[in-house]
Image (cartoon, rainbow, N blue to C red; front, side, top):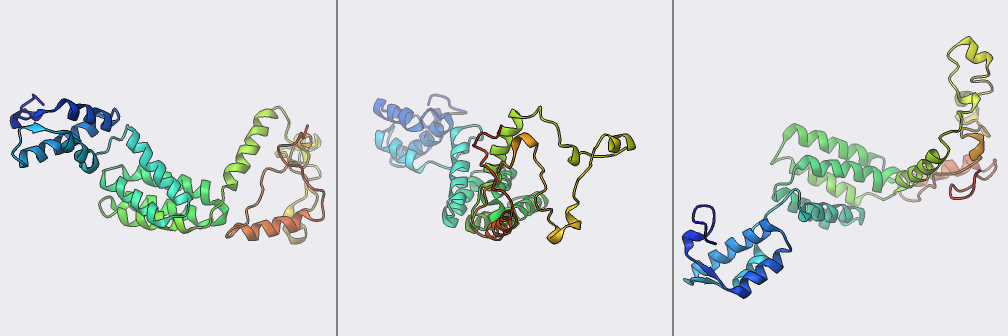
Length: 270
């Protein structure tokens, strides 16, 4: 308030104690939010010809403060979180709104696009495999044309992702597999799956008994095992039922029908 060159001292305004307390409370520890609101409150008091900033000025300013964006602060993470949850929740209106909030506030567009690429794989996945291509194309387009026109491919991508069917099976399958991978990292690669690069390796049994899928009916080697023996027929992937993944699930079910049921990865597989 007292600084004349970098503050509001030139306006010769005072601030009520209650207004000061309201400013501190309303800014929630965000210094930039407090400064932005203080500037608006000061403008309001000055336009009314008053020499003191009141509680009402501060409260209105906290509600109507100018856009600010601290890329290291809570708002940065809150805004991207709201955007991701809106897309995941299949709400195109909320998705484009939060996208606009971030873009208009000066967020790095490539940060937003990176999150959309991740989101396409994590929350849409096999339900619409094209979603990942749309997101990566958006990244290329934004990088190529830059801003401000970059908002166009970003908005298109955000809407596409929000409207796409959803599946998180890539995330859940990897989570299950990674848990077993860490637990069983000592298990050797089965001999029939090893690379028989030399004659000695072939003599040792590397690659022996491997069935080339393309030589089998429907290009599928029924009964062939690819996991370490100790893991048996553990399943990590549980197919979703939406979008393109539904047809993949049907194909997988047909392949698995003749053979033995695999156990869920959560069961004791030895």
